[in-house]
View: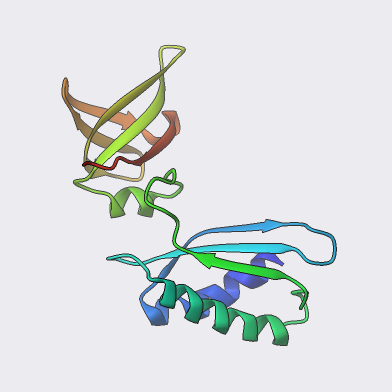
Length: 147
C-alpha cells in the first residue's frame, strides 16, 4: 500500500510545487490511518492540504490496492519536527537548528546556524565556532524557533 500511495503522490505533488516530507501508515483493523506530510518553499496552507487530500481520496477510490475505508490525514510537517532527509537540511540552510549527535561514545547537543549541507555532512556555526558533523553521527536535528 505504501508504494502505491507514494506513486500517487509522485504524480500529484510536483504539479503543485509540493513535495512529500513523510508518509506514515498505521494499521487500524479495516481502516488504516494514512498520514501524509507535505511541504513547499514558503510552506503549505490548510487549503493546500485540503486540495491534496481531495485529490488523493479520488485516487484511493480508484486504486484497488488501497482500502476505501482508509482514514486520511494531510498536513504540513510542523516547524519543529526532526529532519529526516537531506532535503530537510537543505530547506533549513541559514536557519538556527538544534542537533543531537554522537561523539566519543557520548551524546552531545548543540545549537547554531546551519551553514552547509552535503550528502555526507552538515556544517553548523555555533557560539564556539564552526562544527562539521557527518550525517551518520546525527541522532536528531530540527529547526529552532527564535523569538
